[in-house]
Amino acid sequence: MIDKLIFVIPAFLVGIGVALQGVVNAGLARGLGSSFFAATVSFWVGAIALSAISLAIGGFGAAVSAARDLPVGWWIAGGLLGAAYIATITFTVPKIGVGAAMAFVIAGQLLAAAALDHFGLLGLQVQPISAMRALGIAMLLGGALLVRFF
Image 1: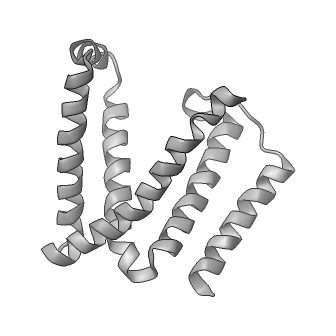
Image 2 (image 1 turned 120 degrees about the vertical axis):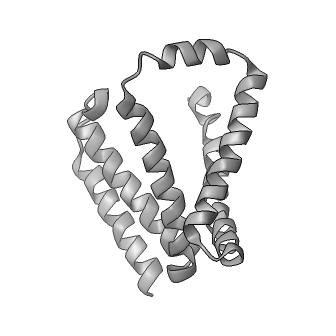
């Protein structure tokens, strides 16, 4: 159990960062006058940082070689989904607040994750949804609605 608990801390910290990212990108959008330009800047800075880290830790050449065998859909989908997230958060946070935006993002993530697991989509091992899991998803969506409207 402790071997899995070690991953809770970085996941929790990244969750804090995701909330901060919405606020920071919204401020960047205000300053630049465009949510989409702010999202573009965010992506470019992130791409440069991740490229530097990838080069520093090594194995970059092997990863590039292995990447040639991946279907192009994985490349396109990953980039488009990331861009959609960044752009959407950048323009929704100023409109509905960071709490509501994050609540709906998390509710959507959990609903999609449960469907992916339940049907074993995209090569995942099937993990059927239970009544309690469905209740948890419904509660999270209800919580998101409460955060936004009350």
